[in-house]
Image (cartoon, rainbow, N blue to C red; front, side, top):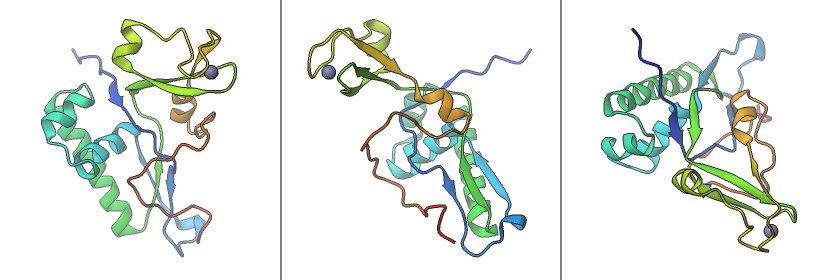
Length: 166
Ligand SMILES: [Zn+2]
């Protein structure tokens, strides 16, 4: 009997989710889809430089599973890079390591997963209003509609080529 697949825990949603090689006409351009957890595995191991054990723990999965996700991720990225394919980061089976909340006045903040489970926030940390609600960018992100409701939040790490460039 196949075990039900556990959700991989992800702490990062990339701002840019599409990479396209220069000079390849769209009609012949092949596209590779990288899941959000595959992107996270690469980030933890190759960008953050974590040991496999730590990275697996962060994603709440076993080391063999992490290794599998990482290998798949590296293979896809290498294929795209060397064979001139586009990469789309989209979908997968994951949960966020934190949730984002917003108050009625528009303040936004993040609550770690562990805190969420223990005690979801009831007050805005900035203005103390109790009119707070969770934001759920994850589902629409997984469906490939981009990430709504995020303003001025920058992540460092990966360089990228905007997909408008050609
Ligand atoms: Zn507030």
